Length: 390
Image (cartoon, rainbow, N blue to C red; front, side, top):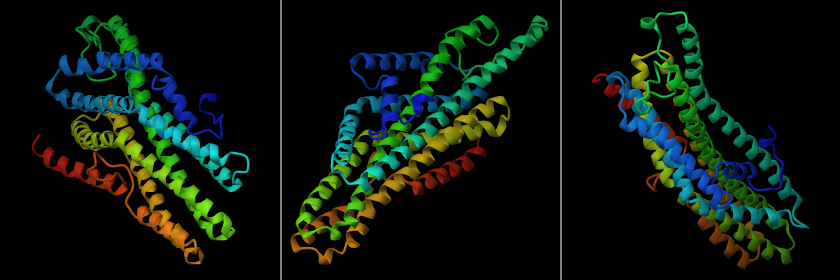
């Protein structure tokens, strides 16, 4: 597990950047060509067959569409990030600049401790999230293959008319090959589509890790601001103005990080909300009448998507709370004892800190825990209406 270890405790989001380099979203044009090839492979092995090659029966259409929506959600989200990856690099530059300032000779030791402790939390959460998503999606992909191996062994002792069908990783056809009846074709399908499923899981996990790293680092900037504001009135008068200038600069950096995260993720968040409603409804409708191995596979996807959406909404709620906490820090810093020009500067920061900050879904509404609850409630309401008509 050395790959996930916090090898650079003073670096900004080292695990997130390492994952981006691994999967071709960082590290130059050649690495980006690698990413483009993997996306194309994923589309050819999963998306194209599910859209154009049809399904075996009408009963399997709902399951197929659920899986297709989930796959399109992953593909679109990683492509959106790839399009905006230069904006993410600017966000990384801002955070790295703040880290360098804090860890420079003579830097505040309390702030250093806060960053080191926060980096451990970021690395732990990123590692846990990546392994959680990879584990869920791997279970979804590996279980049908193991079941098919058991079926193959059992088929050796059966006659030709009594042989069981092999299980595919998703409900799909595969370019005219008899992947359910011919084990050689099935092995070819697993070799080709299995690689696509691996990258699909990795891209799903990487985009989530990047969101965690970006938002967590922005939350850290707000916490550094709050710590410095709380001690502003304790400084000698000749140092207050210099300290306030740095605090204002840090607040500007934090707001710039939110702006960049908003530009990167707001469309992806809107797609996430729409997909959650559609995928939850379609998955529940299928599992309602088909309680079996296939339903368990869909349940794994359901748990992965629900867990990720809840985690993101909870994290973005914390981001909004931390941005508002700057207001309380200004009020509690005994501003009335400070020089008038300092009070005036603080009033501008106070005014700006009272604005609601966070990441929206295509600028329609802020993503938070309340929104997650409304999405779940809406999904259930639509399901109740549909179940009586389908």
